[in-house]
Image 1 (spheres, rainbow, N blue to C red):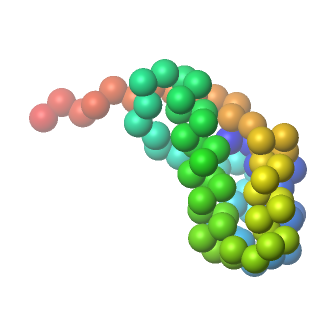
Image 2 (cartoon, rainbow, N blue to C red; image 1 turned 135 degrees about the vertical axis):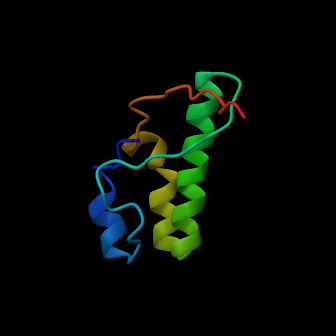
Length: 80
């Protein structure tokens, strides 16, 4: 995910997990749209877990406009 537009805001609120310009999530989904939706939700939940104050909640509400999924890749299960 491209989080370059929110990284400085996250740093300002003490959320050090997502201050890089990109972050990665492993999601189990049936299709790419579902994977993007689940990844966005995982980012929102993670940010709110670090700092659930009202100002951060307002920023998280706008994540759909300020962050984007730039690549979704299918990873095959390991053979055992």
